[in-house]
Amino acid sequence: MHDGWKIEQMTPRGRLSRKKSMEENRFVQLVAGMLYRTDRDSVTAETRYKGLKEWNFLFEVSLAMMLEEEYHVEVTPEDFSSTGTLDELFRRVCAPRLVNKD
Image (cartoon, rainbow, N blue to C red):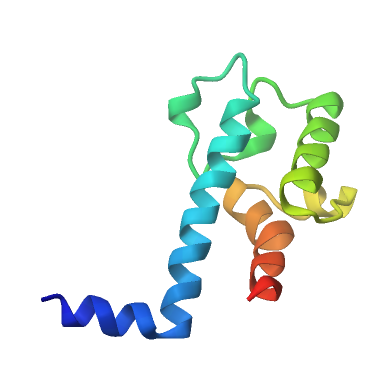
């Protein structure tokens, strides 16, 4: 029996961490799915998304629209200007929505 796992699973903070981690992985995969010139397997949470070969204004707008549709959030130009990695973008835009869902 995995008592340690069971205790961690019952801890609200543990649940949120796992949920956030799973959701962050999904977020990275959604972004990777939008790529057509960059190797999708090379994209991680630490990817500096503005350095991607696809990055331009049209990609920024497409990414904002995808995030708004998938996470029901409003994405602003400041969200992009104040973040550099996919992890930072996820934490700024999507993670607050996950906390509010619980």
